[in-house]
Length: 113
Image (tube, rainbow, N blue to C red; front, side, top):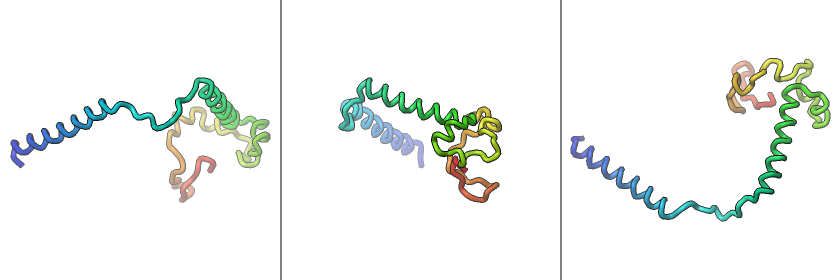
C-alpha cells in the first residue's frame, strides 16, 4: 500500500470511530429497563454478601464450628489442617481462577479439589 492509501484508510477508520462516539454521546446512557437499586436494598445485599464472606473466612482459617454448622466438616481437610496454614495469603500466592487444569492430578480441578 502506498502512503496515500494508508492515510486515506486511517481517516476512514477515525471518522467511523468518531461517528460512533458522537452517536453514543447523543444517545445517552441506556437504562436497561431496570428499576434503580434503592439504598436499603443495597444495604441488605451488602449484609448478606459480607455474612458469606465471614463464613468463607472462618472456613479458610479452620473454624470447626462453622464447618459443622454448614455440613462440610467431612468435606474439608481430613488432616486437621486449615487452608490458611499452607496458604496464608492465598490471593497473593494463588490468584488463578478455577476450574483449571492441574498437572499433578492430570485433570481439571475445581476450587473444592
